[in-house]
Image 1 (cartoon, rainbow, N blue to C red):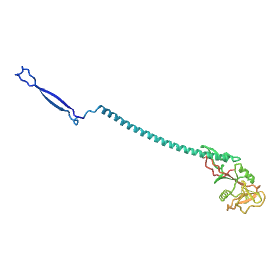
Image 2 (cartoon, helix red, strand yellow):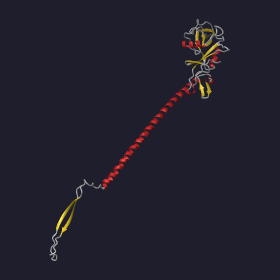
Image 3 (cartoon, rainbow, N blue to C red):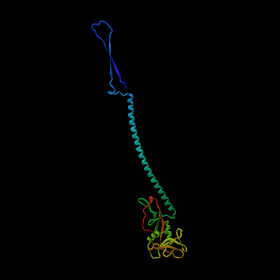
Image 4 (cartoon, rainbow, N blue to C red):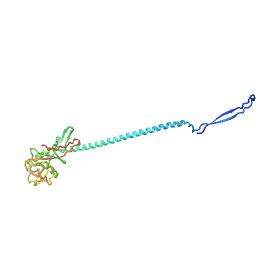
Length: 285
C-alpha cells in the first residue's frame, strides 16, 4: 500500500509596537510541515473486511472436510465389517444347503431300498433312544461285512432249504450268495461244526437241473468252493460246512434235509441324522 502524507499550515505575523496604529497589509510566511505516517513495517495494516470474511470462511471449510473424511472412514469400516459378516453367513448357508441336499439324497436312497423289499421290519433296524430314533445299517444282531449284512442261524429248529429261504425273505433278505474268496473266508470264520460232518449251513445255491447250479438270483454258478465236487442227483441244494480250508467247504445235500442257514441282505444306508453304531453281536433267531 502507498504511504500517506499529511500536511499542516502554520502562519507567522510580524508585530511592531510602533506601527500598531497604522494599518498595513499583513505579510505572512507559510511553513509547511510534512508528517509521514509510520511505515507498514512498524504497524501492520488493518485487515480488510473481505480478507476477514475470507479467513472466516476458509477455517470452517477445512474443519468440515476433516469431519467428512472421518465420517467416510467410519462408514467404510462399518461396510467392510458388514460385508465380512455377510460372507460368513453365506458360507454357513451354503454348508447347510449342501448338508440338506446330501440328507435328501440319502433319504431317497433309503426309501428306494425299502420300497424294493416285499417286507421291511423297521423295528429290526431302528430303536428309540434318549437322543431320538437311531438306525443301524443291518438288522439287530446281524453281522456286517463290506456292503452286506449276514445272519448265521445257530438255534433249533433247523430248516429245510426252502424253509430257510422263506425265513430270510421275512427280513427282505435271501440265502447267502457267495461270489468271492474273501466272502467265503468270512463265512467260514463265522460258522462252527455241529451234530456231524454232513450238517452245515444252507446257502442260496441249488440245482435247477442236473449239473446246473443256480443262485437264488437266477445267476448260474461259475466255479465254487466244493470239497469234492457236487453230488449228482435231483433237488440238491448246497451247504457250507466249517473247514480248515475255507476254499473247500461246499457240499451238496437233499433240499429236504434240515440244517442251519445263512441269510444275506445289502447294507442299508440311513440319513446321517438317523445313523447309529452297528451292534456286532451274534445273530438272533
